[in-house]
Length: 500
Image (cartoon, rainbow, N blue to C red; front, side, top):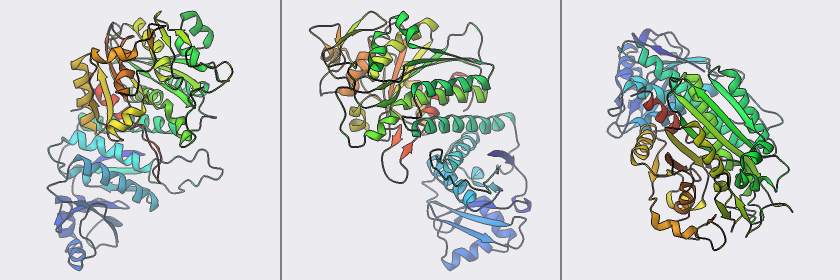
């Protein structure tokens, strides 16, 4: 969809639909007040009749309002004015986009960006309006035999900013929001695709398509023969039970100075995880198609970098594989040798994500990274600890961890830091190898990160466990969330000294 900044007199804007917000207790926002005065109290009359209270989630479409240039007027309830902030804006913007699209309105103007959202900047308000609007419009119907696309979808949305003058930063707000939304949408779609379509090879093909869209993005895909030559015994042990060959997807985005050290993003790309010989229970196993959401978020973040033309160097690495039971699959008690030379006793074949990540993290060293962030749907323990609201964060560098936490807080894609103390390392002790791939029942998220930390000692590193945040498990909203593309992109924007 196309977004345009709008200024001037709201009452004279010619549009198919004008959107204004109303708070509870019949409190009109400034744009709504201007519209009410120009229409001889049309909104006030509605409020007096009790048809509209201004409660959050409440909407009302009005037609043929005298004194206005618009064809329709959409009232949107914003709730309590004292509690209204960026979170309320996001929710309302998504709701508005969905209503406009379903109303077969081709273009509209929303005045919500002109309503203060706490102490948030106009840049943040515009960026989040775009992201939330695209979120409201997203739908996944690629696998339906008779998809029913909207024949008259919303194509243009004007963002009214009052008397504020247009400038380059506000234009950037829109372009950054569109890039983040596109990256999140890509991550959601890849996650929502079933495992028989989104295989490691398919994931690699999607990365190559991204590379064709940008001259700054180079994509290389390593096959199993190349990985074998590099000594990636841990990664390759996972794919032995599958007929789908593993892939190591490497994406190099070069938007910054040639000698500038890159940020390296490493995403777990398990396109389906049945658990291997340590097979999972049947209930909800269909959701294991989402075990590649870490890898999908890396593709989404690189897509956002390229679309926004960010002046930074970023490398994306996605180890992609399936984990299935087979006569040649990993067995409990097997010992494999990772690319780093360290040996691993596999006590549970369902703890496979760390096996493919550890070789990818070792591979990351060749790029001389400034920082490395890995993203993975790694542990059910993280879901138990933090639920669906926050991703788990563990790091060997306080400054890096704080930057990630700040980025998540700014965009509403939050993380929560857990300890990475040496005290937990002993849980990985093995009598037969350098380490075991699980650390027992206690602190499962932490011991998984402790495992990865043994491969990241030579650089600044952070680990995001997104097992609880990458997808919604049930109900009408079941599907991928696109997280943490927004967090990652906001982190990169801050490094570029862009945004707010």
